[in-house]
Length: 194
Image (cartoon, rainbow, N blue to C red; front, top):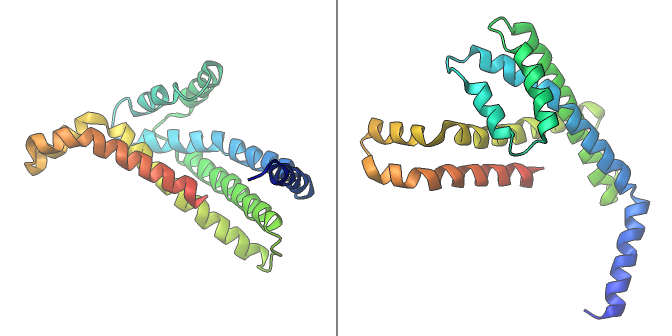
């Protein structure tokens, strides 16, 4: 590719970024997905309070410590500590509704942004677009959930599985690769589905 073609491609890219309001759509998407973080934590904390696994939520927060700034993680720990209780039915419902609303709104904004980017007029009714956005949210959320579960179960689950089904050292040796492979595949699938 010549320098002339490179300059033209760069100029066209900047022109399209402005014409399609790409920055505004990106800011809107970031807003909706960040908005879903706290209802998601409420939902997760309320759901984990019902599971008979001791110390599951603190272990999850320890895993998140590598991805979040320490100030944000401190705030998450403080809020989640007050939410975890065995009587969290109302919190679970609130968290579920909040997550579904904010994430489906984010995916609806993504659909709109892609329509603008590809010059495709939206012909579906509002409820149909919102239904597609909700299905996308559930699908992507399910993929991320499987990836998260495989990371949370850890190496102990591989040993338990090997002993339970009599696969012995073969599964014990393969489990770390299988665990990370499933995590990467499902996370990649969730990103590609988006």
